[in-house]
Each structure stands twice: as C-alpha cells, then as structure tokens.
Length: 205
Ligand code: ADP
Ligand code: MG
Ligand code: MG
Image (cartoon, rainbow, N blue to C red; front, side, top):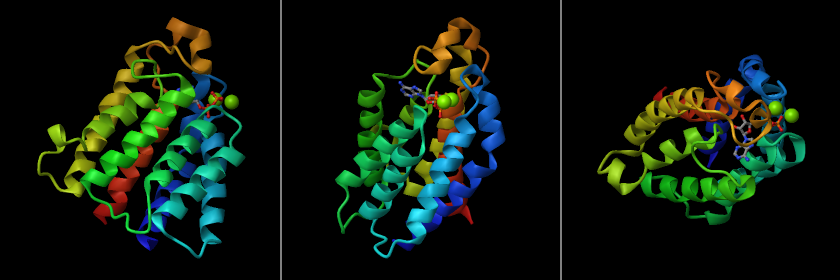
C-alpha cells in the first residue's frame, strides 16, 4: 500500500524535525531520545525506499526491523516490538478500518507492555498509546469513521502527554531521578503523540 509508505514518510520527516525537542525533553533521562528516533526513522525510510513489496505486513516489519537494528536506547526495541507485533497480524488482505486499527494497536501495546514490563501511569509512551488505543474500541468509537477516531485520538494523545507531567517516572532512565521527574513531559510520550498527530495531519491534506 503506497499510502501507508507515504504516511510513514510524512511521520518520519515530522519526528526527525522534532529531534531537538525530543532530546531536550529527555533531559530527565540522557538527552538522546530525539537522536534515537531520528536515527531509527532515517533507517526505516531508507529501507522502505528500497522496498518493492509495499504490503502492510512488509512495511510494518521493515520499520520494526530498522528500529531494532538502529536504535540503542530503550525506545528502539519497544517501538520495534510494536511495529513487529502489528506486522505479525497483517496479511495481504489487511485493510485499514477502525476494527483493524484496534486490533493492530492492541497487539503493539501488548508487545510494549511485555517487553518493557510496564503499564499506564509509569510516565512512558504507554500513557499516550493506551488512551489512543481506547479511541478505536467499540465503546468509544461507536459508529465513528476511522478519520474521526484518529482525530479523537490526537486529543487523547495530548491529554496523555499532559498526564505524564503529573507523575514520577517508574520505568526507564527517568526513573533514576524519581519524583524530580514530576513537572516534565515524558519524551517517549511526546514521540508517540507526534506520530499520531502527524498521521492525522497526513490524512487531513
Ligand atoms: P534511553 O532511555 O535508553 O536513552 P530513549 O531516550 O530513546 O531511550 O527512550 C526513552 C523513552 O522510552 C521514555 O521517555 C519512555 O517513554 C520510554 N520507555 C523507557 N522505558 C520504558 C518501558 N519499560 N516501558 C515503556 N516505555 C519505556
Ligand atoms: Mg534517552
Ligand atoms: Mg540512551
């Protein structure tokens, strides 16, 4: 699906543009989250450019592999697991709708939780990704279109990022400073927000 590759191109460019912001937010850790994400996405885009098979399964698995091979930090294997878990559920017939997104994102989050031994309320990317996921469940999505659900998800992502400001980190490097991380946004929550927001912006235009 060329549209998925185009969306990822757009998202990658946006994340790479925010490298400095993400590094700055990671002052509660080791100030490299922007560098890590930029490296991962640059590698992912190189790999996608070289690809002939643009099926959803292949695209997600190539991004996951690029993240796992090119990011040293915690976020690399975690986002890699997310993309690879989603890829594992795809086949040549995968089409995007609210139900598919619920399924793929659910599996992605499950992968992050298992790999990171983490859950909501620990000041991580999960504090954005889980509220985003909930926007695609039947209870919240109702009969909304996919586009509308993604619009709602951007709002949920922003609220999730705000929430990370109010709690101490209990996972990852920011947990070393514990309570002193309160008042700061989590960098991984911000990179997740950027991805969701830029997916919406890509679809909007
Ligand atoms: P590192 O901390 O190894 O330098 P990054 O700076 O790239 O890696 O990524 C840090 C981000 O990864 C955090 O802001 C947080 O959102 C996320 N993170 C770290 N550890 C975990 C975990 N165990 N579970 C979920 N997310 C985590
Ligand atoms: Mg870091
Ligand atoms: Mg690091």
